[in-house]
Image 1 (spheres, rainbow, N blue to C red):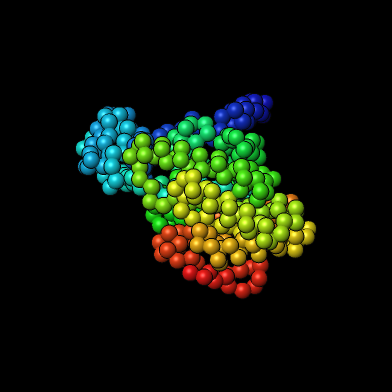
Image 2: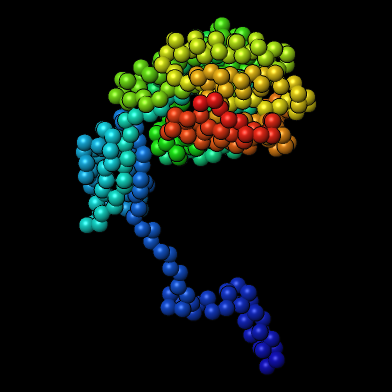
Length: 374
């Protein structure tokens, strides 16, 4: 009898090891796994566009047919497959209907922009990191690719100006992340005017080459962008040049008087050659290994903005960006520094556009407040 008990125990142990307890008795009544179905949703609830732009609207998580319609076809149309096209300035509600339910996307169309050419040397080119740049606000900015696509517009993204190398302005392989997205976000937040940005930079450049050579390519790119915008029926409200340059002149020990003369000459030639209205100047900072090296250039830039109506100082912040996490090598700013610089410059540029008055700035270099002579 004991022998049979031992055999039964061995068989029971084997059964328990091979089959988890109660598994043979488990049913959907006592073990339930419920997965919630995903609810239908549009891939966009709102979208900002320029006249002529298109995007695809989709109703996700549905397998049945969807019908699309526009409540204002003069502003935006939509195809049976959900392709939305911006026709004119205004607002349109695009609806998607499925099984009697209606889903809506608000489309805002602009037909007016500010054209801004970003010019200068390596800190304007941007030696930061595209991944650390801020996310672009929907509808805030576009890049006019004057070199590779004859002025065709693309949604702005970092690294800004990639492959836009031609003639004297050639920074091939050096663009890794700039201040432009940060500038555009800040500018758009205040003005609500989309920016079409044009890249025009060259590393290691001095004031002489800008006044004698580079200005020609700047003007050519502005005119090319203007032509492309006109072809699309997009109007330009303001046209500005945002300029950051001078580090090379600091190393060359260029005098204050000479730099100022060449800076004015450069912009006068740009303005004469195209429709750029003002030079919005981002003042350079400090060379961290020799904090006084750029003093004459900083003084020249400050004085030009105080005394010449064509120049508006929009940032003095670079002088405050001395911490290691803002400095890549003592000359070039990290993306963290570029983001701060771009934001200040964008806000002050927006203020100038809206008021026509040059901003007063807290001046980290001189420990006072910069007050323009308006």
